[in-house]
Image 1: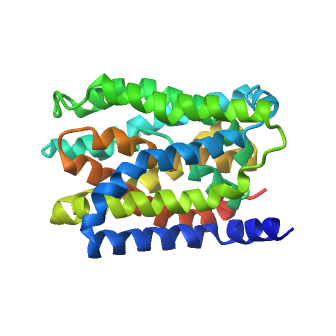
Image 2: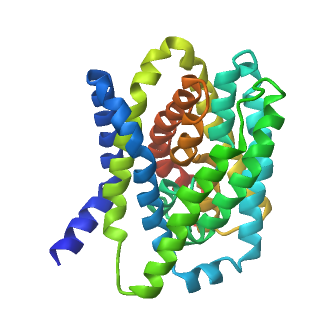
Amino acid sequence: MERNRWRERAERHQVALYLLAIAAGLALGALAPGTAPPLEVAVEPAIAALLLVTFHGIPLRGAAAALRDGRFLLTLLAMNFLVVPLIVLLLTRPLTDSPELLLGALLVLLAPCIDYVIVFTALAGGAHERLLAATPLLMLAQLLALPVLVPLLSGGEAPGMIAPGPFVRTLLLLIVLPLVAAALLQRLAPRLDLSAAMVPLMVLVLATVVASQTPRVLGAGSALLVLVPVYVAFLVLATAAGLLTARLARLGAAESRALTFSGATRNSLVVLPLALAMPSPLIAAAVVTQTLVELLGMVVLVRMLPRLVSR
């Protein structure tokens, strides 16, 4: 009973906890930059644990039923892999003179979120269970699409920076292994409930990522400021495009909110290991900058979207 009460309290205040985790990470990274290297080593295991809990929350039978909703699923894929790339292409043209910033922006903006998007969708009354069921498909689709879309949209401005090795490694360590482990746990321990670990793990991941990358962000100086208006504009345009796409597909209110959050929220936590494997520290700093801008935007969107999409 006490555990359930603690979990309900954590879930009720999870957005505030995430913002506090970011603030703590910024403070630790700025005041104790020597902690960044060991924390960077902990980033991938922390993300893998978070994804294990996320995948474990997907009932296999329920996922199959949710994936039979062809209209929502096709609209979700079209939004993230047709509409969003067009928005990204438009917004990133001013970055062509800075290949590292361009690559970082493309890497993060082209990847749909699969973790805390479910939290924000639920808070806004969206169909979070459908997003949860579509999570493995979205992750696999973006890992296949990124090696194609990033070089295509970079226009050859970032030659030699993209290698297949980091993508394959990320696929195995952050997707395949957590997904298989979650399936085995569901089969061997059907009564096991890991949902109480979701909020603490998200707090841990956010604090670890931000603290480990803050020295990079600070070291970049004002170079990253040019990305802030790009990321803000993406949030605005992706939200508008999500609402329009949902209306054209004639989705219900809950599905429309889920689609809009999926289009506007990006997969910065999972693509960060890809960015860290690339030669320039600016690429990872560009990814982390997007996380900071996005989470502040999500707090606003959670309050606005239910008004924009009423039942």
